[in-house]
Length: 572
Image 1 (cartoon, rainbow, N blue to C red):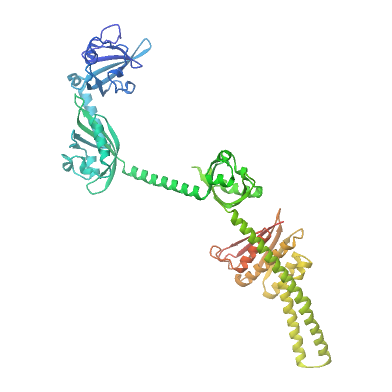
Image 2: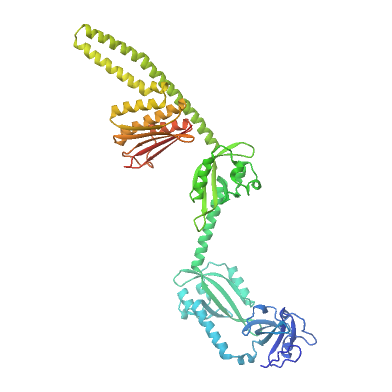
């Protein structure tokens, strides 16, 4: 081929159909062969766009120097296959492209570097056979060629496949409409792409990402089809699992939204999502909440330390659980049982938080009423203990003491063995009455306060049971009567449990006044127990209720063989 490249100044001399276009695709010139092929008599091609004659071509993506199969429209409007090679050049700073066109039945293609073209085709076939599943069928779908990959995945031999159509591997998964659409597409000369589920000879199923390319004759009709496939069975399995997981997440979200108060915030606590339940209970509109923090519903009930501890927990990537009292837009208060879950990035840092809440306002109201009732019962019980203790001490105790004096006088005036026995029995009864009176309500607790009462009790306890109790107290003030009675009773019950179950000869009690609470710790190094398995008995229940009655908390730390530690905190 010979071509003069001075565009527009000289006539091109070539045996090929050539077209010169500018960088926008508009035709600058055509040679005679191209005009014969595309342009009707008397019509001018100059200034027309190349897509008028080669409508399916994107000139920009054509690789210079290589042949690409496309389709053109002849002067009669007939659609014919073409081989196009693009060469680029510049004149006067303007970019142009020279398109060399060969009709599919043009024998001149055979003279254009046949060895190079053949080698490229062989290389492409090798690459396809090594990497993909390849089959060729005639226009009726009868298999003419399969590569080793096809046989490997389908479990059929080449002999079993040649002469058959693809129904031999039909899994029955796809509808008839699916297959009709496939055949309609390729029969019209268009490429079909999609995913197909096939069945191998052994009954197993496999998925393939499929591209079917029709080969067209000079009339634009398919005469054979090339099917190029890539196995995607594992990919489809992962996608299916992902879809199931996504559906589960959708179902979980629906369940959460229907049953719980849900909010999502960013790492700074700015609200990015609230569900309808949140708006319903808080009385705020969604637009009033998004972009703000939860301070919009802060009731002022909880201390700053409470929220510091909450943020310390979730900021370190841990889940926080607790009960919070909030305030709705209309001023009403409501309680929520809250779980806050941090979502972590690849560095283990929270990037957002999911808060799931259940409204427990009614439950808290009932609990508070029960607590008030329990407090009243404890008060009544303590008052009755005080009354009985006084009656025993001032009534029966004094009467017994009078009898003891009388018996002592009798023993001085007469000598009889029964008088000595009566004296011993009266003395023993007086001690028993004193012990009962002390257990009911030690008078020293009312008269002198908590610390003297504890010391007196510990002396009696150690003398009676042989258990040494180390007592340390740092308390600068008297507490309220209710708080002092509560602390005394919890210490009394804890030492009773140590005596019964710990099997030790020593225990420790410390009382310390902190910033805004009094902390009491009762500790032993005895047997301990599994705190995950114990059921709260009457003693532990009584201790917990007494702590709650004064707004305090009681925690038990224990494990088998490592002793027990009871910690009570009561607000000042």
